[in-house]
Amino acid sequence: MYRSAIQDDRAPVQIFIGGQSFTAREGDTVAAALLASGLDVRRATAVSGAPRLPYCMMGVCFECLVTIDGVGNRQGCLIPVAPGMQVEIQKGKRELGK
Image 1: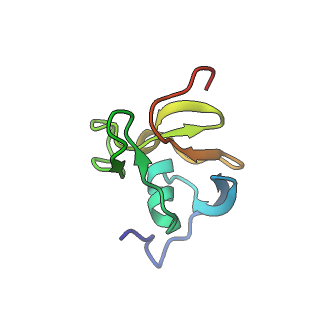
Image 2: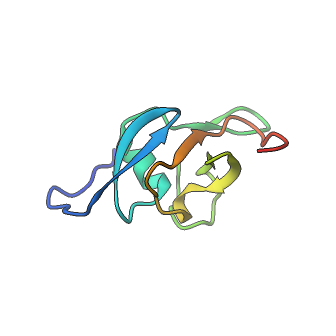
């Protein structure tokens, strides 16, 4: 569905998605890295549990909500990856304290 350009010479950045190591590229957003990972990155909505994927990639639709470094409800399309970043796919509503 999504892949980086073959000529991509940006520096690799190691992030963790659901505890699994993955290499993203410097300058990628979290949402782009999730789509490029090939992992099942669908979040579940709080109301119906319906699966969602990043959609607009510009911060309008809120379909890319993830937990980043323990902080929930972060828009993955607006946050660039950082070395060692811990990303969790959000399932349902945000829990207190996260």
